Length: 146
Image (cartoon, rainbow, N blue to C red; front, top):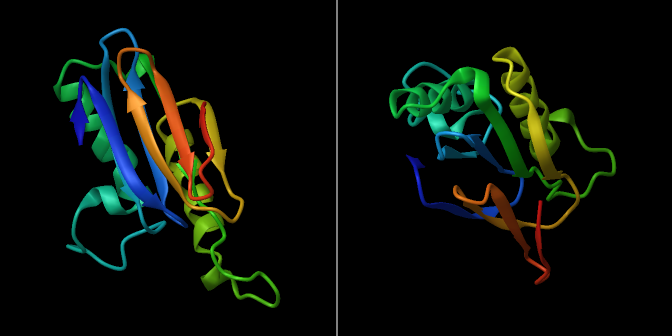
């Protein structure tokens, strides 16, 4: 979703909330990334996958008047929700999502302004487009701004 007010997503466990914004134009987009890449063509919303969410958000923001040279990102989530002992790479969904989002942002030249990723706790995030603040509320009841 792309807009000029507030953007919010809940239930970020291993998922990553990616906010891309143009501070000058006061436009932002948010994707709730569930997996690093789509399992195949036509696999649903591009916002669900890191590899497609970032380019899709950039396109949407630019269509609303944003400029690629001014874009920045903030992200949160990517928790390791499963026990890590003897775990296969397949079960490292949170860390793989974070790695994929960071790679997708780097591929299009968008710097990361701040991030709150990893750990073992779920999050809800809300981004205020006017103040550029990303509020994080953890499943343990902590609230803070990044």
